[in-house]
Image (cartoon, rainbow, N blue to C red; front, side, top):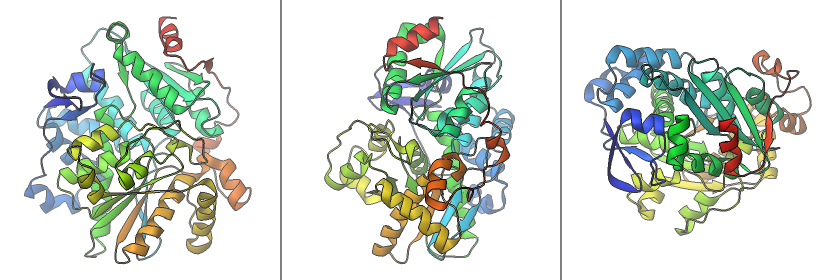
Length: 434
């Protein structure tokens, strides 16, 4: 299996190079040379497979024999050991709960798969692997959990000071061991820029054997495609004729790109709706064809506070840089914090369902989509457990209304260990050399 750069279609690297090096030297993003539809034999049995077996079948087709069958099956089964149930709110809206993993966020799918894949690809290497990752919320916690105490691996997480919730932060800064945290006096975009700068320094990347766990890494996206298949078959079992419209709370747009990969592999999907907060660079692009990254704006749906989404390059690549082609398949809608708060409250009052601020942005987008397409069947990706944003939930629904699972509550009193740094790539270089 080979990969090329979105900035150079003639470049060719193998699976290990794409996954371990994460970012091409030309600052593009890796994409597989080919993504082909799954065979009829898959569709004959997909309804009856376990979630892990479904993921294995998709991964096996994607990797085209690059990993031996039994090794790949072990990776998928060890990573995907929790469910993603589809919860129906009404006949038009369902919620895909992606927070049943160990850190209560959808990032567990990608992080757990990536940790096991990287361990497999580097099992014969002598040099320690350094995982460098920027987070706007849940990525860091999922990566920390997935890589904690993995031999011959260290993890350095960059996160914006004041830009993640208290419990999200505790997931980054309390594990210790091979996990270190850098608290950046800036935004997520600063964190992402610092990480990219390190990867584009070829000597630094080689010296420290750098790899990324952000969605710039192609191995993060494949396992996220699994749950699109899983959601669609749960909907199909209801014996409905409508194809699903996926409504995706979006920040760095890795989740939506994973859906596009599922679609390229043959999953029938009616439409995608990208739902953002005030960081609306992609909805604005879909409206007028002008892509204009901007400094990120802090909101209560903090994991989506991204002003320059990395995966937009992959989206453009998939659609051949055609604005018309992209907007035929993807619609974009944006909402502010007050609208988000009202949606959290409305979902609780109308449906007796507790939705987090990111899912609430998706709910708002679904409502507008259904006004124009009343026959549509929407699936909102609920990306994190609402208790991860307990201050907002208490403010909107009342203190004590949102239950905090024990595996999150137990972090509250643990000591924070993080180094405060300026938004300068040299800070990371110095930390790597310590």
